[in-house]
Length: 252
Image (cartoon, rainbow, N blue to C red; front, side, top):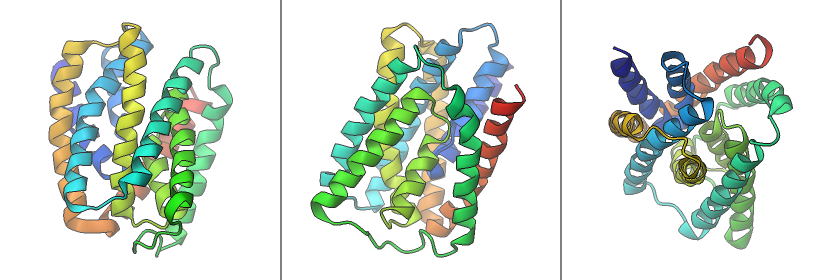
């Protein structure tokens, strides 16, 4: 029964993550609930292994219908990879105590801003061009990549918000970029967890299959219904993240 529940959780995590990120909101608590005797690092490593496949499939699905400027995306992905790896190493020495308490407030501010700005992310009107866009994307990839390696909750949603608000992308293209950068972040963290022996490969593979099915479903829904649907999902996921991170920070 536990295996079945984890498989279902992986499916819905893949679905949500494919649209706006935040799949870890479902998958990580499920792993911790049903495998309480397993080391936290091993559960996190298994989550990364299960997640990266669905995120990769979602990225491919987006890229079939959404065009991105790879001269901007690839340098940003490289920075996300490097800084995520650095963050994963740092968190083994410095616990993210203060960041844990600040995160709910940051997410609340993002939710309020997005809700009030009805036109945000509806149209695709890039605000940067050429080398400036590349430099800004590398900065965003590095900052959020480091956050993902060091702490992690809501990484995909942060990427989506940044590319909508600061870069002028619509929600659909922002989600496509977020998927590519998420793959880089997950790959860096997985490299660290795998090297240190913190992955249950068999369980991760089974959850990966279910996550891929969820990702295919989620990305098709996002592509079919467009930026308006993604915006609503974004607000829903951020609201859930606020509740979850508030509980973790102040009541655990």
